[in-house]
Length: 366
Image (cartoon, rainbow, N blue to C red; front, side, top):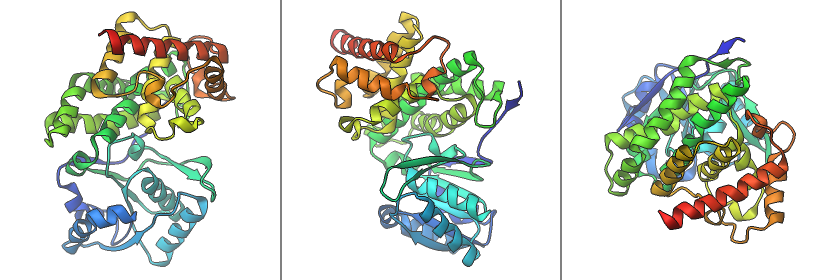
């Protein structure tokens, strides 16, 4: 089967990179369209404007708090064409990055993505999530290529709430285990091929970084220190996990996340927090060795990721609730079926119950 590789064209990470945004943008065009929300503009607008003051590239800022809908994407693409803007730059969280990627694709211009947290691996992906005008999920927009530049200011990331970076660790935690499952099933990636050896190796490197530096990185972030451990975790959360999931594929961990997202009680939890619990469920579905299960449970507990349904906001765990989640997980074409073992709603409900019980065991007996 053909192998395929997907990635951003360029990735740059380091403290102070936001002050060099204008200089970086000049490599892609002469008049940039910068997208950010009102909060990011208030916090970093002066810094961003200063980065363009000595640049050969001018900048037109568009502050938007609109959702990432097809209408908003079209409006921003039309604005780019009308004003001759190239590149389009998105500075902020997932919504802004999705808008920038989609609008740049529609307008046919390069895109630069500047995440302000390391809460997910979305910055490196060739994907935007679109919503309806009413705010409901609409569809995934698969783009022909990853971002032209992912520019990560690690000092900006380190100043974001620690919980966001920890949630990013939860998202990244699934990367190797989902890659391993998809490899066993020979699942095609977004380009229709299997993962290259390079992508598979990076997925495992992502897990190695989390287990070896994750605890130290959290402690350093809480102390306000931008350490080498923090830099490595930022790279793991954004780059290694991003390349890993997009090249190797998603499996049960993200399917469990999707099932939990249907519950109102879980909607205050971050994406990576739900994915972390989904990873534990996936390991149980795969009948992972006891040593591996213990290692991942203890890692989650040590950095503050949820290991029980109660920690996800579900105080009353009943058979009916478990069946409800399992039915939502096992919908047609769900990635939960990308496992080298048979899966059904009943099996998933049992795995949810077992993951919750094992989480309580490690929480209260270690």
